[in-house]
Length: 312
Image (cartoon, rainbow, N blue to C red; front, side, top):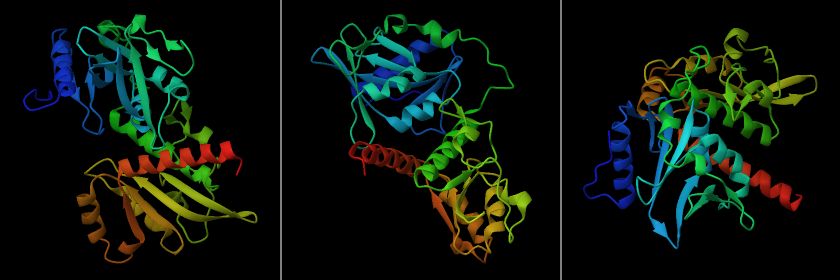
């Protein structure tokens, strides 16, 4: 469960010490394997663990936009910034970091440069501009004594990641000028329901498609043509290694030769097994890894921002 301290760097050693310290509070600790980042369920919280040595009287953390976005969409999300020692930890809600991202410098790849000063406050753009983190320093109680979440609103990590990936697909489609639809209207992405992001409230009916299957596809992009809509892209997010029903749903669009059919999944082995059973039309399908979708999404946002800045 814990990173080994043998032949690892100082950051890994600090992370291991942090998890061992969490154990002393009798907290249940579990690595969240669905996510690529070093994120754990600790007590009732989901925590991204980052560690840094001291440099020039500040602590530096590089953190990617899409990583924090994924964490911030979990239930009870936190980032634990370990500042040189497990006696100096800023345990801050991830939604606060996400909120202040516009005031933190970043490169074109979406890597944000988070600096924490000697008083353990997060440095923002502008002279003497800081996030006051005094109430987040070594606040283990914030992780371990969170209020219970109603079972009806509680999301699993898989459900949360599904919402994130669907939200990113909708946003990319919107940026590219397509009309977007998703059946999971009440799912949340960045504190908004997906139906606030999609441009179509109802799925258009198509002449050569089973409507009951069509309207269940995870995300659809359409191009308007007169009073009608032409399907352009269909996406199914497959996080389960057992049930891949999305491939079958997208088959209802096979008669539309222009439509790209995409599976979002990290399980290329399962994808190849499913495609091998199709025999016909398997060449119509494509797979995109979760991380690559995240990179595309970040690039689309950066391009949108650049176009706005230069007015072109």
